[in-house]
Amino acid sequence: MRHILIVDDDTLLRRGLGFHLGKHGYKAQGVASAEDALAVIRRDPPDLVLMDIGLAGMDGLEAMKQIHHHINLPVILLTARRRELDQVLGLELGADDYVVKPFDPDVLLARIRSVLRRATATVAKTEETVLTVGAIQIDIAAHTVTVRGNRVEVPPRGFDLLVTLAQNAGNVVTTDDIMNRVWGADFVGEPQIIYVYVRWLREKLEDDPNHPTRLLTVRGVGYKLVNGWETGKE
Figure 1 (cartoon, rainbow, N blue to C red):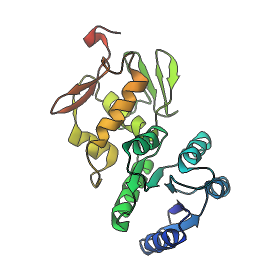
Figure 2: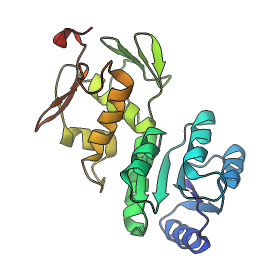
Figure 3: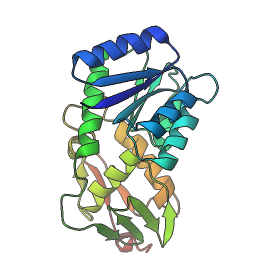
Figure 4: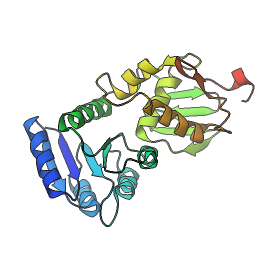
């Protein structure tokens, strides 16, 4: 039985969501604070964390940073904040997805299933464990990325996207293919989320993110990762 940790200071939400998840075969555990969540994770790591951003004391974003500093757990953010900044910041810090309150429990359930499926799937479809595209090196087993030998931090979903592009280096990967491979066929969000991750990846990988030479957009089709020699920059 998959273990879901619900971190929210709304008692009714925790109980209602826990009941709904229990009906669908999950073990749901709820806590009201980030501090309690970290204690649970150290004692009995769950398979996935549902984390409210607006917690009293330590907020959800800081808690997620601490979680990922010690263990690689999938995190879905629950937020009442509608500003894109909160969502983008959460993704940059390593969230696998986010859901804006109020939400349909069945929509959240679909997101949970998608994230868990990706978390348990093998990221690499080939026998290669290290992918090199120009100055970029991706160690799939170690879950690390370097650019010209310098380590860069990439959130989990961004890592999956980068691996997908690297496995097809030099070729365009369509937005539909990216959605299916990285987010899953039953993802119910907007495809514009790909652009958010591409933007953050460029911040990490490009010398000038406003004029990318490695992660290129093919308008109306998708994206491709190139070795830099194609653009004369490597």
